[in-house]
Structures are given as C-alpha cells and as structure tokens.
Image 1 (cartoon, helix red, strand yellow):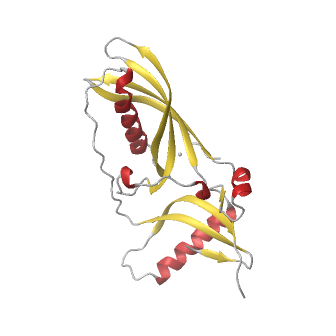
Image 2 (cartoon, rainbow, N blue to C red):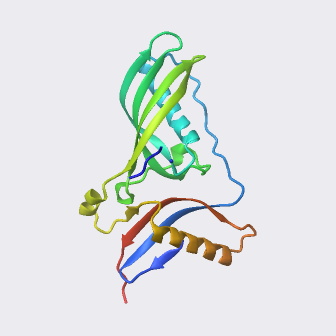
Image 3 (cartoon, rainbow, N blue to C red):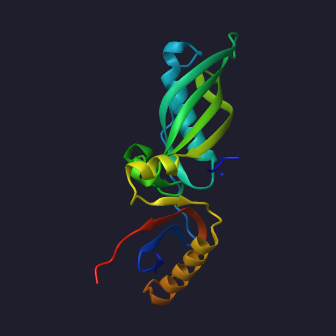
Amino acid sequence: MREEKFYSVEDFRMRELVILAVLVSTLHVASLHKKTYAMYKCQENQDRHAVLSAEQFINEHHRHGYKFRFVSLDSRTVEKTMDPCEVILGITLEETECHISSPTPLKQCTTRGEALTTVTAKCNVTVSSIKGKATVMRYICDTEAASHETLVRKCPICPKLLPLHDPKGLKSVQTALQKFNKESSHASYFKLLEVGRISTQVTSFKL
C-alpha cells in the first residue's frame, strides 16, 4: 500500500528480483499538456471538463511515481452555486506505465494490467469556475495497490509489488546503477532520481 500524502537483476536459482528504477541525467524533459478552456459553470453536464482538468492538475503537481489516468466519477457535491461556483468531485484514477518525468502524452500511456498490480487513486477534488474555466482549487488522494493475496490466487507467478523501502530492492538498485555507469558508453554519468516500483517474481530456470 502506498499513499499519495507521493537493472540490476539478482539471480537466484528459483527466484528473480526485478527492479524498476528511474535513472535520469541532470537534464529533465518536461511534459507538455494541452489546457482545457471550454466554458465551465459547475453544471453536471460539464463534469467532463472538470474531471479532465483534475486529471491534468494532479499529474502536473505530484512529483514522484507515475502518471494517473481518470477512470470514473464516483460522486459530486455542489458547494457553491453563485459565481464563482464550486463543486467537490470524487474521482478514481489508475496508475499508468509512464513515469511522471516522461514526455509521453497521457493519452498514449497505458494503465497497468492486473498482472502488474494495479494501483488506484481515490481523490476528492474541489473544482471552481474561474473566469469561466474549470480550475482545481485543492485535492487530496489516497492510493492503494491491488491486493497481492487476490492476485496470487489468479496468477501465482505474477510479480509481487514490494514496499519502496525494501532493503534488498534498494541494494539491487544501487548495484544496478553502479554497473550501468561502469559499463555504459554514455558520456553522462547517471544518478538515481527515485525508485518508482520494486517487485519480486518467482521464476524457474532450466538446467
């Protein structure tokens, strides 16, 4: 379980620890997003404008991990009907395979399938109409990974998501980074920005 409030491979005879780490140089490429400027007055038939603004805002303002894609609008509460109007939207987002630093447009990012452990974010987003635009005033999200116990019953060999502070995982990341810098032909020296995911998987090897 993770909360928003945001290769080295070690070989074993019967299992393999797979590490997903983000290696970055000193230059980071910023992702560009198109703004939604459709007229917004907090009407229910305009909720699509609001949730797209919320999705964009959340991805632009969380600094770690992966981009999230809107899945469903679960609730709406009207807070103010006068100008500027204000609504609170309860929305569900799912984690994609695009890191937050990736320039890949969100629409080209795929959400993680069940076998890769789906991570879901439940968010309450306050949206207001500022100069006729859907504007996010504040938000709070709780993220949670799908239950491994449920997944293992369906797919015993699927990777298991580990905590980001897992000692063996972090040690493997550092080993991987050292090996990469030693063997790489790149002129730049890479450093670790963050560990996005760590997973372990049972595999079998033929002798």
